[in-house]
Image (tube, rainbow, N blue to C red):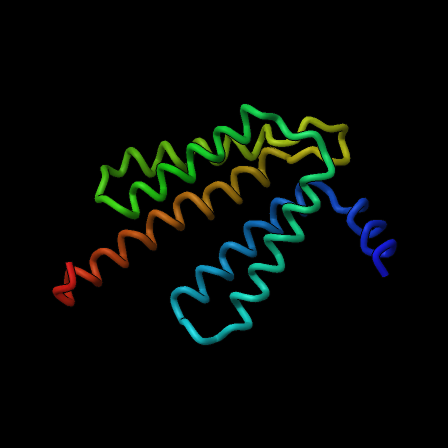
Length: 144
């Protein structure tokens, strides 16, 4: 069974791995928005783990990994404090650039620009929008 899994992971492209990670994060967002569904959170975690495992088999660009880490830090900072929209735009741009240059591999593992833009916008802009909606809801309820 383990050998079958390893063989299947070697046929996943960089684009598919990144889309799998993005889908997993979106499913986790659904679980956070509607707690108790369990299936969406579990499927999201599985997708993220499978996507990361597929990406881990290629050599990753340290600068691109740094850009993705900076983007995540900026999005978390925006979650903790209300920041200007330019910070969210910078985080989204860092995600797109980081995803576009993430894999230092031959053509099979390459992440195409269109995939990087789609996944970066989904995660960066989507996280920023959800953060602003949640902040407004908390303010309207008098929790903040």
